[in-house]
Image (cartoon, rainbow, N blue to C red):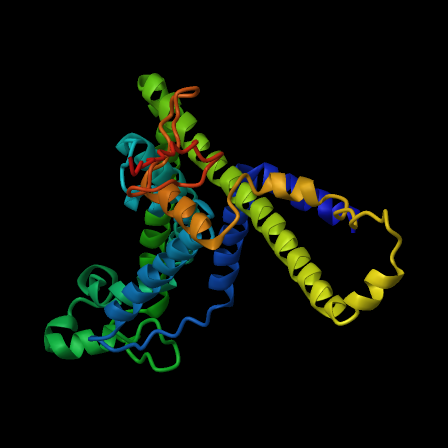
Length: 345
């Protein structure tokens, strides 16, 4: 159990490594999904291309959206994008950096699916079987005797060996080898291009815009850490709030139960008895509340954090105002009281 706890803490502290591992697992899962997928070409002229396009494009889109959903930074990006500027301006470069980092990881599984699909060749064979040059690969002298619809209907059955009956015009093995050769060439070209693009994005781009890259990376990490610390502080405050609230409830119930025995207790209690001491840790829990001791103050604080985050200038921050009132973040400033006296002289 301790080993699992250590692994979980390591993954939490190394979110980038964790997300890379998730993307690798999704890439392997996409390849395994394709190997387990039962590809059945309809072998009809009007449906082969649509079926192949769906197999080639729909699963990568689903995998890309899953990659974005499984990334914890999606909500952080949406929150940073939609929040009011307040006293902290939004930097579009940071938002672009965050989105590009998520998109790069989310694209791994779709790229693997497209590459495996092209290298396998079944999808390409089903889509372009009607475009095989019969005059070059088959018996070209018999091709003019067939009308275009009949020729398309005959060639559309090439992916289906059980129903193909056009060996007299074009050997099925020749057409399959021809189309799979083209598909594998496109697959390896796709792998090469994506690898080169990833190399350029990950290695070459920071060399030309190093200062902007470091700034975007720093503030992206800052936003992530700030959100985690705010969540931890809210969790700590909620625990202290709940603990003090429950203690007050039990003390109030105990006081109500003792009201019926008040006369007997006063008669038997010694003259110099002191009041019961507060439970241990009560003062510490109240310090964790940081002066936020009611539901309205908590709601105002959370609204103020969303609408008007503090500026990024340490040592110069002031408690953010909410309307005409006090946000509740710290000791309340002293009030000035004015007393008027009237004389009847």
